[in-house]
Length: 148
Image 1: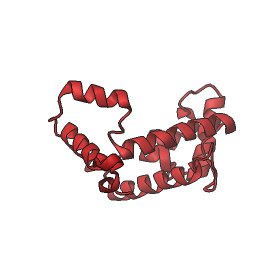
Image 2: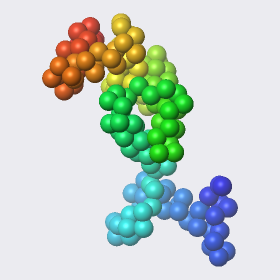
Image 3: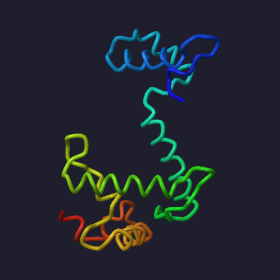
């Protein structure tokens, strides 16, 4: 439903919320108003909120399975964690091909897409093996990644 259609009791709530978000991003919303809206649980960025929801599901899925390489159809607690991961990997791969994410180099693209030299699935398995061997970041698992 578009924000302009949120009109409970005749008040254009969706439009008002959009204006509050815009004013906050522009630095034009008083700090006390920002605090009041935060107390209400206002979502300031839908993209950030969606990412955080996916991240929670991903962490829980990984804790249960011991890795984060879900099949595309994987669902955790009703959240399509496999689709979320696939979309992030695709976005990182495309950004890596362009060499930028939002105008800057993608610092985490390899962590999402896997090492180009060894392949994504094999790379993920080597990271898990490195973690099992006592390397918390798995850095010893794929020496070719450390030189890139």
